[in-house]
Length: 418
Image (cartoon, rainbow, N blue to C red):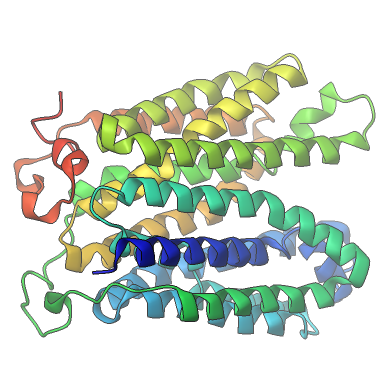
């Protein structure tokens, strides 16, 4: 067990490394369509389609690989998984700056999804090393840092690409990820894998299936939250057009709203992780999903940009509050030696949402109208909230020895939850 001081220092170093890694991965997102054009796809529409395919490809392979990496983390430890994700990402993204065709870039994006996944690996490591009773708070702080990096990365990356060129930006991203990896290697402690996760077949239920019925409501919650976060982005510029006199201001305003939403979600993550122990995990997720859905639906009918600002910030705050608390619920639903596999499923649900969200948002805007990307996620959020109110089956009741801290014992659907 880490001493208190060493544990806090290790956590601080991990936060710095994850800010660097998360910002680095998003560094190249703004100019991806332009890079595709440089690789020979001159038509702007085809380049945008290629950019969408590149993003979906990464999310798809990550969704497939995340549960496998989670199970491996249960056996080998979570620090090696974080090092694998960060350093592999550094190599693959560095190679992206050397490609000569969009097909080569697509191959590397598929490989990136299969080998990387720093957020999932960091979540598993923080969950495994947090002192009892602080898991929710630390997961909230981690998600706050990730959201903040998400707001900073595309802005800085787009500016930097304009100054030094797109290919050089891939090199900068690779350097940021390498720096993050070496920071983890030298300054972050790991929790040893549980003995029952490393000894052979039949060890303390290691080979039994995960309790999927218990996990499913929280996996659905994470999926819906990330669909809501990503699904609006393709439709936002078109939605804003009637409210803006100068067409040139649309892109700038959309960027401001997206960036401010990321910061509101960061604040929500911090608050949600902080109060999870006091209010109970399940209750907090239900309330946050409900409030996020109620803030999402009216956005389809706003009459001015000011109303949209208020509702976007409110919904983003509540969406951010769900993420660390739902991850805590997933972690607490299984025995310690199975937590990597469970959090791997959570990472898979999130990656799937990253693939589905932008695609569905764009299709809804094109076929139904620009209000639909707000209405559908709002309805899904309310539905996920209702799903979490359904009672668990008797065979899915939590085993108290698997739960850590009074918040988890009280919540997750137990009878003692008032």
